[in-house]
Image: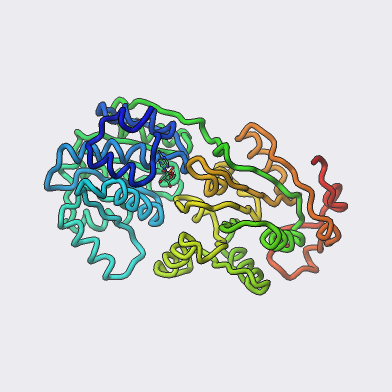
Length: 408
Ligand code: AMP
């Protein structure tokens, strides 16, 4: 199948080829015809599969053929970073169509709010928004969505996790009842099905290999106790030929401490966390995208939505609590049919979490032996250790004491 088969508007087709898309991804192949026929859809697809294009392309096609002087489509997304990235995809794909869009999200200064307000008043064709800020514009009366034709809920599971359920329902109360609604979610828990029943009309369902990481990702684990983790991290960064690396840790405090330790070891790294100003976050992401910053470290907030090409290494400094988060974290590499490596450090307390991940992805993750020069590093007892790692760990037993991996 090629993009020509969809018979998109010629200006949209030009945008698609200028973005370098030659063939539709599986989710695009499945979802686009259903959406073009005017159906509501509930689609299970994670980031990295091309799911943004799967809903944007048919919506852009519709708008290009039915252009009106009012806002036609609203995309709701959980985070400002994702909203901005969707907006960038709209800009790229719609470049030759004359379709306008704006990203609306909270956290900026008064100037940003004013810019969003003016964009909204200019009747942009597509608004991509985080729910909280959109409600501010709706309740102030600046934004009217009574002619909306398309509502898209992107990463719906994450929006519910973040507590946006009431906000979503409130926003929907401002929308016309007759509209096409597209719900995309990486997972399909019961809450999403309940939401779908309330907001979708007789939807068609599309599943894309539920919760499976992209095939191009070489997944590896190292069994490492907490005192080995940072030396192992430095070893991998210094000995591997990786140009672009994301490191994930479970808490903001660990992110900050680790960034300090890596900087002290002369690694060019920035920490990305919620204590930073919006401007600082944007600057870090921009430098990372431009490959001026080779290493970025953050919490799971960074695992959603960051759409940077050419990330060759993802390191999980610890095992994420939710196996779905593992899929999201490692999905930052090997995006859209490239390859990458995802390495996870597993200490003895994280064994159970590792098991849940392996169950979810239906295969064991390849175990790599810790380098010899790091094998001697001893585990420090909780009370003797001052650093954050030890506070999260206890002395080990069994194989963790001799630190030899069970299998190779
Ligand atoms: P997404 O899953 O929507 O976050 O998309 C992941 C990445 O794949 C983005 O960088 C898209 O620009 C890219 N992409 C989406 N569709 C295609 C396609 N058909 N061919 C090549 N790249 C694509």
